[in-house]
Length: 310
Image (cartoon, rainbow, N blue to C red; front, side, top):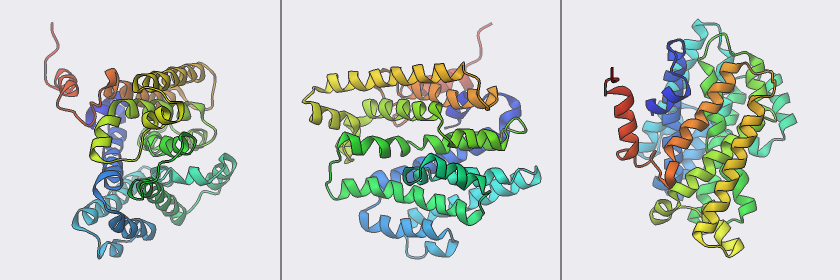
């Protein structure tokens, strides 16, 4: 996980940002797995309700593993809030909490999001967004547990948002220092072409690399299976088509990167670096994030353990 975040920003001045992003990403990854693989539908209902309440007392009655995860979420955001308060940046926690439940964007038009952020929403609004995150994952879990197969048109909007990429992008800015302003957050949560392109890269590369493993484990149909079914295509044809969409998404990112925006260059670089690392984690049709003891282990050893040749 830390290897991934070093790829986003390696500079010493972003140590706090790396720490925050690493820990939040770990919890989001576990949250995704709880809804995707470990929780039963009967367990996920009260867990989603607990996140709705955002209260330590709501843990009562949850399975032990859910209690442990829920407690870590509450404690981490309290800790981040305290750290930001000492630096006069408490407002950033609002954006981070909102982003952790990007599901809110699934139900809100971009103009509504802009208005929502412009009101400098209170903690209760931040909790509202976390509720949406849980509901979003629950929606996908319900597809699987009820045996429902969505169309590709149904799947893609939800699948892009359940990448967690919006949450990671927003969280990546929280600890970056004075280079990040409110305008950077609002730019990212508005109609941001780079963000959508990054979500496409993440989703389709993930699906191409991991769909076989996930179908064996038990998972809702991925974009690969859905494309094959709707277009009477082979697996190879489906993967090639999705890979073309990944290439087009990179073109969108490159186009936006050279176009002037209100976002400063360090912000753009951090967002794009998230996608660059994604390209490493899911390259050659391999899921090196899930199966990290193979190719990814060699990269980690090379970066952190092996000395540089002189």
